[in-house]
Length: 126
Image (cartoon, rainbow, N blue to C red):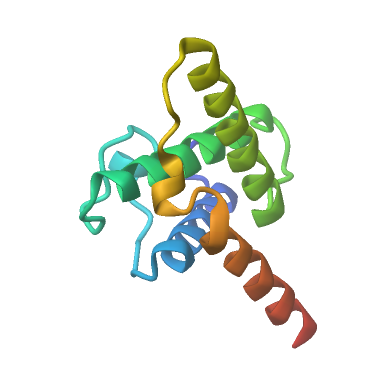
């Protein structure tokens, strides 16, 4: 249901496309990484893998919230969820007196803004 369903596969393809756009790499949907949390082999740095983990956690959370529905979350919902996770991590770091260091890899910074602009540009060409 989480991977083999034809409709859900489209959701994971969208997530892979989002990751590919952010990291400017070709990332294929892989259940070991997308569902079980293994690091993506195409990402070389630990910061990139941390960002990918946040994005995949957001995707899994969105999918779990709508598991009985035929509605699939879109890219905008994914971006909102990633930003929410970032905010929660920032609050946690503040409460524990530690620094939150995801700013070094642009989370959710420039790459997500660029992704949003790409989405807007592609929608206007349709």
